[in-house]
Length: 169
Image (cartoon, rainbow, N blue to C red; front, side, top):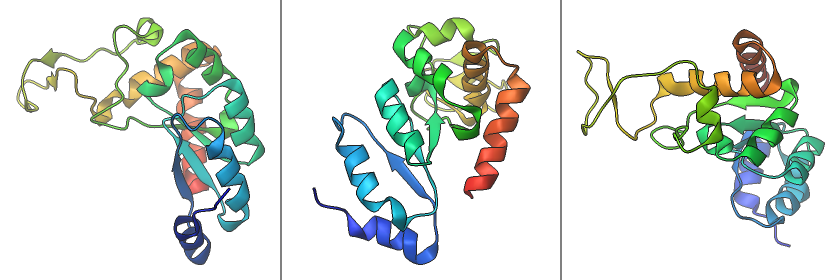
């Protein structure tokens, strides 16, 4: 398997963390990252929605796990998120995408709701969010879902994610 030297070499040269994305890679992601793992100090697998096996591979490489609404689409996803150690957890929105959809089992675990309008633009006067668009403020919903599936407080989850972010950057 070929490595991709440009990205990994830049991370190595400038001692930068990697921001990695894996979707539908059928195991190739872990193979490529393992081939190049010594070239970067740390990193996060963004928008993680993998299996327990994928989680184990990533944790074995000492990487962080980025969780957003796309990570919380199915009951299986929620079980995987439950298994993510707090020491490896990062939270994200990936706005304007990856909101927690009403069809997701995670939606039942959200405590904080935001008014939505069927417009193309944000309305700062009425503080309404645009329908079907993820916004940075919605990160609280990701934290609420993670806390619920792990049986922890929102504060515990947020603190762990903050500490991991500081470690990475």
